[in-house]
Image (cartoon, rainbow, N blue to C red; front, side):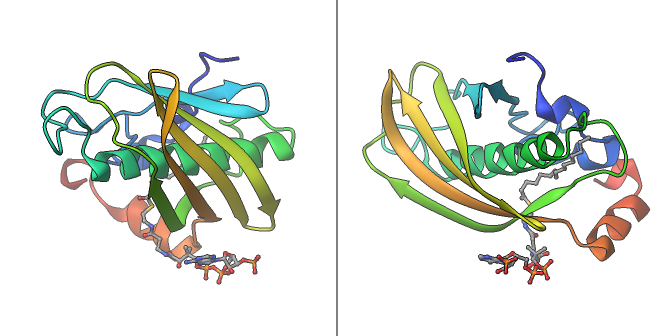
Length: 165
Ligand SMILES: CCCCCCCCCCCCCCCC(=O)SCCNC(=O)CCNC(=O)[C@H](O)C(C)(C)COP(=O)(O)OP(=O)(O)OC[C@H]1O[C@@H](n2cnc3c(N)ncnc32)[C@H](O)[C@@H]1OP(=O)(O)O
């Protein structure tokens, strides 16, 4: 189901993330989905996502890996339980660790393909290996360790008014 985007199932109060929140008009609004046992997202960088002229800013690439990784973690946890993503209780994940290796400069021009592979799913933790490719060549690889959001963090988010998110 390549067009069933994980982020479209996030509850409203968790949809303000700069990288992947559908309600953040200033954000990247990354969309991730299953492709077999892997996950995939496409992102078209804007001309202002520039580092050295002609190349994509590394911080943006890290953000794409981060949000694709946490989205993949959540989707994997639901799939592991045999549940659809909008069923209760919610399985919300945050980033515990983000590791990024820039293998070669990422050309700024065409769309980027972000791919995730789940390497571990145990207890409250999911480890996802992520690549970012341009023109069919892997430019960046990363590892996201995502952990289920602690209750106190979720409670604080629920208390925030939407206007201030
Ligand atoms: C309908 C669908 C709903 C889906 C809904 C999804 C919503 C999806 C949110 C949307 C939004 C997007 C989000 C974008 C990504 C951010 O930007 S998230 C923001 C940045 N991240 C944060 O602010 C997190 C801050 N850190 C923390 O809150 C806590 O340190 C953590 C990460 C929750 C972990 O704390 P903890 O719960 O006490 O974890 P703990 O029990 O000690 O460890 C659990 C496991 O994780 C490991 N671990 C913990 N920290 C680390 C670390 N730093 N390095 C390595 N391993 C670690 C532990 O070793 C342990 O592993 P095991 O021993 O079980 O193998």
